[in-house]
Structure formats: C-alpha cells, structure tokens
Image 1 (cartoon, rainbow, N blue to C red):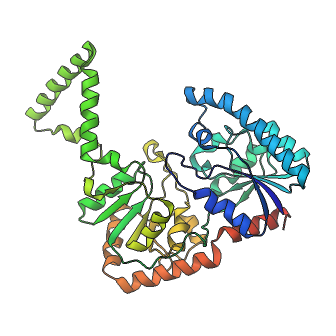
Image 2: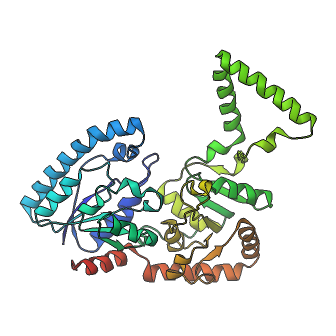
Image 3: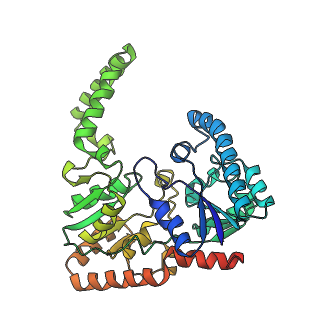
Length: 391
C-alpha cells in the first residue's frame, strides 16, 4: 500500500521531540507500506492553530492557503510517479483548506485523518473532518459528535511503538515520578503528594514556572511594571491597606491565593525522547493524569486515555493513573496497571506499592507483556485498515 503521510513530527512544537514520527510514521513503514512523506516544516503551523486568537487567525489565513497549495503539488507529483492509495494526515482545520481533501479524493485516493485532542478541542477539526473518508478517533465519547458533524469516525485508541518504547536495564533511582507538561490539576496533585511526605519528582515543559525563584521574579517584574503607572500605584496602596486589614483579623493573605509553589529540587526540565523512556525504568512508580487541559476549572472534568497510558507499560515501567472506565477495555486494572480515584487514594496506593516490591514488580511485568501483545501501533493500524477494506 502506498501512503502519502502528512504530519508534524510532534504535537508539542514548543520542545524537541519525534513523538508522532515514532508512533505514526515508523509503524506504517514497519508494516511494509510505501510511505511518501510530505516535505514541509509544520512546526509554526501547529503553534498557530487556534482561530479564536487574533494573531493566530491572521497567520492561519495566510499559511493555510500556502500549505494547501504545496500539499496538492507534492501529492500530484507523487501520484504521477506511482498511484497513491491513502492520504494519511494529522491535520486540524488550520492546516488545510477542506476543498483540498475533496480534490485528493477525486484522484481516487482514500483519505484518513488522525486527531487526538477532540476531547476538549473538537472545534479545531470541525471544518475538515466531514471531507475525509475516515477520521481515526481515540476519544470514544466523541464518536457521536463526529457523526453529527457529517464525518465518518473509526474508534482507534492510542498505542506505543514497541521498537521505540522499551525497558532499559537501569537502577531504580526515584520513588515516584511524572514526566509531562505542567498544566491543569497536575501541579496541585504534586503539591499534595509532597505535603503527604511522598518523594516525588517531575520532568517536563513548564515545571520550572512553579519554582519559588521563578514566581518571586515574575511577581517583582509584575509589580515593577504596575508601579510605572498612576493606576498601578493606586492598586498597590489599596492592596496594602486590605492586607493590613485582613491581618488585623487573623486572616493570612496567602489563604486568598491558590497559586502552587514547588521546591526547585524536585523540578526537572524537558527530557529528550530517549531520556523520557529511560526515566520510566529509573523509577519505582510512574504517574499518569487523565484530566484534559483545564477542564477541571469549569466543573466538568473531561478524562481521556492518553499516549502515556501505553508508553509507560510498553517501556517496562510500573504505571499508576487516574481511573476511567474505558481503561478497563485495555488493561486488567490492579494486575497490569494501577488506578487511583482521588488524591487520597493515590497517596495510599503509592505508599502501599512502595512497600510491596514483589506485587509492584508482578504488575509491571504484566503491563509490559499486555502492551507487547495488544497495544502496538502496528496492530492498531492493521485493525483499522482492515475495517476500511485497505488490507
């Protein structure tokens, strides 16, 4: 099968990674497909994919037409050399004009789009999705939404490339770790665990923003900018008076803030892909969080199965993640991975498994074996391609 493949190498262009190249492109090659890759630097495109932002909307308007023109040129050229069977993309609306998908289909090429942020960013693919032959959707609860918008979804859960994600023979240096970006409820969970006396470490983009040093510097700069204006001075005097009034009644000003500050000693920077995979072998317990973005703030927490739910056990790590019913379709909970239901439950289970090494080791091994058996991208693609009638 000859595939024209179009995607950025990572969904997070803010830091270096080959995430999607490792998990989408390489498995397609491994399956014996003749894969032609779109030659276009898409990092800036994926940094500007939100039309609700004025600056990004301006960029999208110019870049979308430019990218579309180049995409069609390359596909037509590749198709003239040898017929393309499938156009496989990781696109959102900002990437391509919908009529370009129609034109690709008119060449007798089947079109497939993979997208994994529809749990809380479905609006970013509403325009292009109905124009594809199929949309691969890992969020089961969004299937009906795709159908309602006129698209043709196929449920395809995330997975891990076993040729990339694998165990390393390294000593266990850390009790509890989390590798991933700092946002949403994650800092609150980490602060809670620290307060409970658990030795937890974090690595990833944004965690340094929660250091005391960073917050102090940011606060000084913020105050300095305000004091350059008369209005800023008036606000400063008002807040000083309010603070003195609150203190007189025994109310701590700190109690008015929910900002999380974490000790510098537990905050690590962004890891390379290999360093991240090795970290899964270097710690006793790897954490996962199921909440999407900042959905916890609006009273409607959205939970989603994530790439990490397969990456960690595929890499041979012991994995502990917030429970959601859909996970039971992929793991034997308590025997292949461990799930928690609340911060208190997480704390209790961490302490239990840190002191029960043999049970932890048995679960770690079982999770790794399950992923090798059932949760490779290769098997995911084989299944959906058969469903499409392509295999």
